[in-house]
Image 1 (spheres, rainbow, N blue to C red):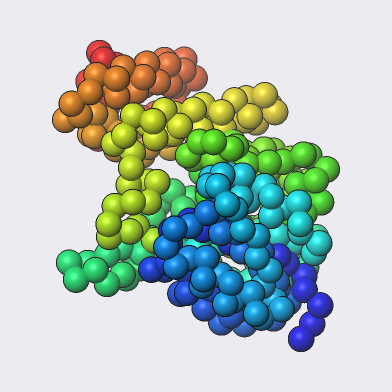
Image 2 (cartoon, one colour):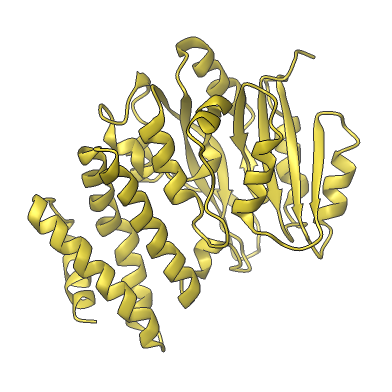
Length: 319
């Protein structure tokens, strides 16, 4: 086995139904130059046992929390323990495609870029509870296709639409020289750090290959599926605001415009549809304020809106 080149950080809390499959997807990588740090965030199911059994393999090390600290804090703690040149992430309910590390690490080896960004698809449950992958969505395609080597955020602003932690491999030096950390104590913890990474990277590789299958859980307990709750909505809106503020503050106007267009075309309409039938005005009020602010900026900057989303946005402005 070659010396490890990349550390994959795998946090998990109460994902015992899926964790073994996630770890098997690491073992199935066509590249053997990896190690993994598993973080059991005070699970009360079999997640801890699955992680502990995996740690009998010297490629895996284990961090245990007695009290749940959240996804952002779990990733940050593991980042401090990385001793390889590269780092990637995999949530313990997702699946890494077999050639993911070979493709992402190989790209960085060839270009010397700071980060390689791949495509991803959702794993959706059917009526029986079985999961199957969907298609690459348009915003993912815009971020990662066609392939580009050693590009930048200024040259390819649409890469800002790929905000998830787990479709990328990056240089640990990028994190440390820019003091990059995940937001803690809230959901959508990857929104802000993703934009900081892009803004800080000296060069970026984008790759259209699907590297991760992201699970939409049948029981509806993943964070994305909890957007109907007021606290998760608040975190979502703060994450989008924070990411946009990073782009504004770093002078990446084209990337900021791209993010505004994507938020108004994809994120906001989905939230508005939830809000239309939500029993709590505390859900509608902050969403309405967010839509008004973002819509006014889009109008000032001449950002074209998807005609299909305009009626929803108009309705939300009145909240």
